Length: 120
Image (tube, rainbow, N blue to C red):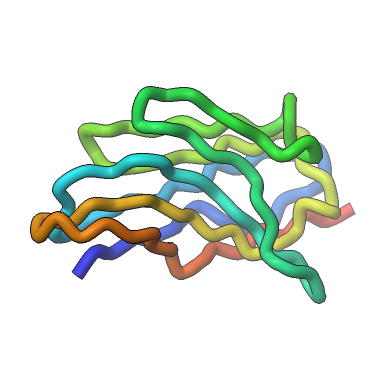
């Protein structure tokens, strides 16, 4: 059973930085796209950033220039470095990965979420 474990969230003041990590494990044959989504209080889950297996990246307009997504393919891990954080970045952040398992089953998997709170 594939497992994604998010970590790195916390409480930070506006203007501060955090780095989120998400490690995938168990029964992995290959990982294609990886990304981050977030869900703020009373809001729907929204796209934040994504990275392909080749390293191409895509960002939501609201985080461009402030957030950087990266990945370590050897560790099956994706990162999200968040700088210049704003109170509106407060949300639960979820990682997402398109994974092919050892049985060649392809599906999208989600982490359990990590809370990011930005105080003003």
